[in-house]
Length: 350
Ligand code: KG4
Ligand code: ZN
Image (cartoon, rainbow, N blue to C red; front, side):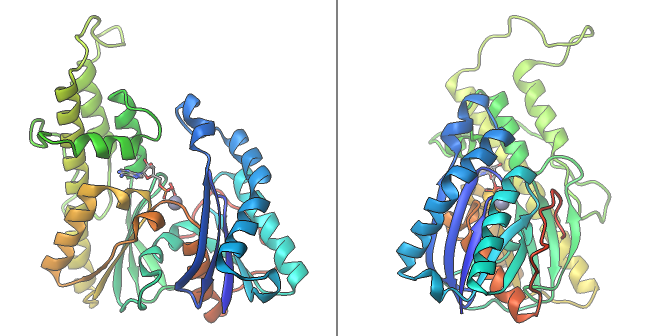
């Protein structure tokens, strides 16, 4: 079965053709980084307009690269939540028009849920039960997964998402947009000392499976600017950071952020076991799974726990449509198709 996937939730316009849920025949992503860079973040109005301008070309590119004609498509899957409404509506409208005109099923896919499928593209199906982790710009959550389509959220961030914390930390350090990859690069430079600063690793309650990154972010801010003065604002005339100081701050921030994730994954395995599920697999996904330190530590954690890890290829960590088409196949098999009243929603369903 050939599924055409469409993704337009934020600042990437993407389309892909995936066969039987896993074999990626094509994956085209048009990034809008250059349009938003001067504003230091995504401007929703600019994003929606760019999706409208690019969606046709991206779709045509995905079909062309796959060597597939539109008439050969068996179903159309679209990321319809969560995201920026104006952006989501572009993909949803394109998907509805295609599904209707081709007379094939339409499948609305939750983007956060699809990140969990990204590590299984171009690979064998994973074994279940599984523990799932999504770390992206908008979400940081863990899931109990009984199958690819049956999942229950067991923990989530109480404040910033991990990617958001990286982006804000990068801004504090004066690194350009998009911040996460820039911070990763700086922290990976030779000589970077990740133990130079002891930043807080949030634990929350003894058994909590939730995350919090705001304390870590504020610690970095105060380390860079000094503590706020009684009248508000920061101490004036602080000397600018040297390159070495900036590098060590980035490495220490990254160290603490990754430790928080590994700590909660350990607790999550214990929780699932207490609930009589011995997980076999660790499903991971979302933009931050591109982070070099997180990838290393996730690999080590999975090996220690005897879990098979599904870490997405770098091109499937950040937003893409192959994961949407892939999960779309699993949803179709579970009988979960949508009709033409499908709408966009800003919030995740999981
Ligand atoms: O999944 P994604 O593309 O979009 C959302 O669904 O949010 O994730 C984007 C996030 C951004 O916050 C970006 O800074 C972060 O992923 N990111 C990284 C790295 N690559 C992307 N964060 C840390 N290290 C990276 N190498
Ligand atoms: Zn995403």
